[in-house]
Amino acid sequence: MKKIYLFLLFVSGYSLNLLAQCPTGQLNVTVDVQTDSWGYECFWDLTPTGNGCGNGALFTFGNTAQVNCNSGGTQVATAGGYGDNTTTTESLGCLTVGSCFDINYVDDYGDGGANFTVKINGVVSFVFINDQTVTTATHTFCVANPPVHDAEISTEGSKYLQIPLSQSLNFIAPATIVSAGTGTITGVKANVSVTAGGTQVHAVSSTTQTLAPLASGTFTVAPYTPQSYGPHTVKYTSQMNETDEVPASDTVSYVVNITDTVYALDDGTAVDLIGLGAGELGYLANLFDISNATSTSSVSVYLGNGSNTAGAPAVDSVFNIRVFSTDPLGNPISIIGSASGIIENVAEKWYTVSFASPLALAPGKYMVALEEEFYMQELGFSDVFHPQTSFIYALTQVPWSPVEDFNFPALFMIRLNLASGGLAVPSIVDNVLDLYPNPTSTDVTIAKTKAGASVQVFNQMGQLIISTATVAGNTVIDVRSLENGIYTIKTIEDNQIGVAKFTKQ
Image 1 (cartoon, one colour):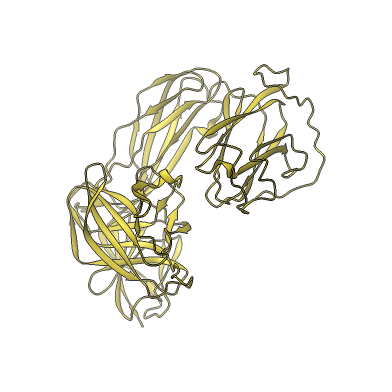
Image 2: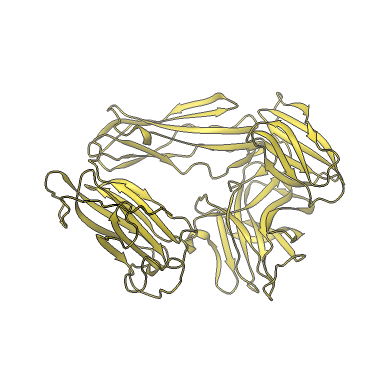
């Protein structure tokens, strides 16, 4: 939320003109407002920048009858304003070049259900996205002449952020390039590079296209199959014959970590926790693609301690993980594996639960689900999103349905742990990790680590019980929840496997 600074701002030459033609020194500005499934929760006004909501508002939009500047999170609105799951274009008329304004957004429910796209003379100039935690937000834009030539590149990125080497998945996603200026751009292409361990391991370019003003094109390149462990950075750069006037939008990148066993859609950061509700039977699940035959010994899931029917934390309650076979489209067929764990007296944490025996997985799609029953369970979700990857099933409401059907664009923090290895990597060498303290009762530190390496902790039965990643410097692993005994830590980074044992007492 933006601080409010009190000062006098003169907006000269402001006029309400709904036509595209504006006087010299002014430009036509519109705002596209995209709502979620509860459009009536949205309210916003437009003020000179810094004024704050309701202070000298030039326009007021949305559910003005029930929601106002002070309504964020109050949940008082019931109807009115914008429609559900709609995009409404609001005209701000002709605004003076160089003047700046604030969109002061209020969400009555407090789940950030509206997004804003500001267009200047019909060209997308600003996009403001509100996440699921937003109650109020201030978005600032300034009026300026749109560029003539601008090749703006974007990509959805890799569906998986951690991929076991055994699965050999191409993680280079298609790119989208938009002619975001007022002129046609020619010879447009996407250049893609993959870097691992500081070395470029793949570089390729797409074919060229010509894009008219505001038009977009999809650009694909030759795939890349990873050959080594560790973080891989995929960088996209747009190129065209003309000089790009907005170079800041010419590049985009993302990182995929190639692991030994961990298969993850989430980015490791829990934005919040979600559950179906006490007594509501159902599932929260992620869909995984298996490209090469393998097996899984365990599943990792990020859980809160939930609540029982009396509203107290559901400590010592059992939670269940189910693995479903699916049809080729990913629709669940039947349960092929189950594992269980116990909710601990902690606010939230990663749990790893093991199957009685390794579960064989043939190539295909599998649904890995947290079963909801008897009490309110809480599953972490990550603020990244790819459609048709996370699913909800509520027995009393709907059959299996993707989370986007509920306007919930986020991924559940459920990970599949596959069998170690699968592809020969001759360059791997074993190192002895520097661990301390050892023995320990609270935490163990891996000394002199680089950021992004895979870390796995195994018990004496060979079961994976902790999966995380290193940080720069020293990596500290909390082991207070482990039973007393001897454990093995394994790190994987740049074709090297580091191993050491420690004693929990």
